[in-house]
Image 1: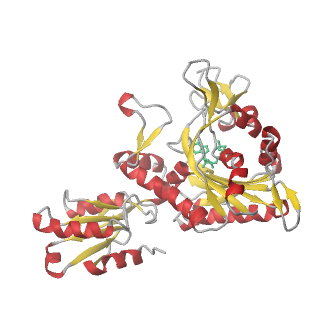
Image 2 (image 1 turned 90 degrees about the vertical axis):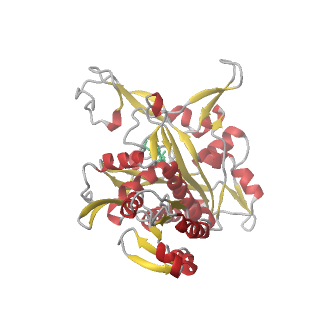
Image 3 (image 1 turned 180 degrees about the vertical axis):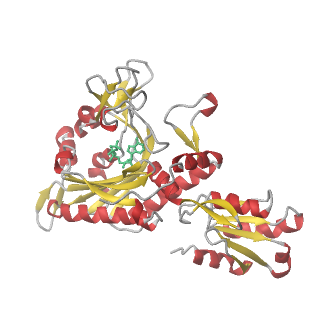
Length: 440
Ligand code: ATP
């Protein structure tokens, strides 16, 4: 078994503080004392979260010809959740501590109350995690509806719609990014486990005989996606579930785990769901959810391979992996070594002084870069302070405009990781930055 990489014991607190201080993630409704387990994404956080989702969409949909996207409703009727099995089995074992009365998820506490240390609990009860609500204007008389606890069912219920509107045949996939809701018993660890979160899921429909091979393929592809975006190899591991631990529908599940400050824990799950979902929805809805292979003249229910990731959880992992402290000119600096594709700002344009002479050319540089990069424009405080501020939020490149620029039409490009500075002509700047960012 891999050892957990040595991590700073204060890392979670440092990243949580930085996230708040620099506008990544705020406690929701904070001016009213906060609302437990909900978070708002601030000006930098929203950029980064969008980048995480964009990187996923790009690799799963844009760069492939076998996967299409959808965006399905969050509210759904009970029939969907009855067929999927969620009404019956989407539960966690809830126990009450007999001493302090706190409630816990039994499988997460090793028999000891994290609040008071007691080992006396009530018998576990199955607690359904779905949020139930009413749709319709008359309280108490509307139709029951549920907030989706996963995005996946939207892909199954639209299987026939998608198949009849696009020319795909298995193996092909349907992808979706969106909010999901679970009434978690013990939300915890910042945005790792929250009651409202965002998922990035893809259902890949395959001929049954190819399911095992595609399952292995997706475990590899999804693992490599995190590596490509800068998570060090030693902070990831694969955990294949033992047969006895599999969900009732699963023929195989592998978690991609990340070395969080509290230890190895799930980042994403890849499951071979067999034909469970399409069969359930076929039976319950009366609509045949099958594929007719004309060349072989056979009709079959495809198997499904599902890589299910959390966008908000992934963003947290990227932040934790990127957080570094090093020393520059005898001073400790904090930096986020984020891949440029994930950084909230990719370029910061920093006029050396607030003097009006520099503003025109600085804004010219800004306008040149904005269509290609998310840019920040900052004229406050000393240049050294501004570099530190950009390092702390992971901006890969700073472009400084100084009085020399007015003579030579060149600017200084500073690299976040090496702090190296290079003089570049304004006319060559875009090409230089695209090249450094390795935009392909
Ligand atoms: P757990 O066992 O930790 O409750 P799970 O195995 O039920 O999670 P899945 O249903 O496989 O999780 O969900 C797929 C992905 O969605 C997870 O790997 C995670 O990234 C994300 N996710 C699930 N629940 C939450 C949550 N409450 N908050 C944030 N992300 C979540």
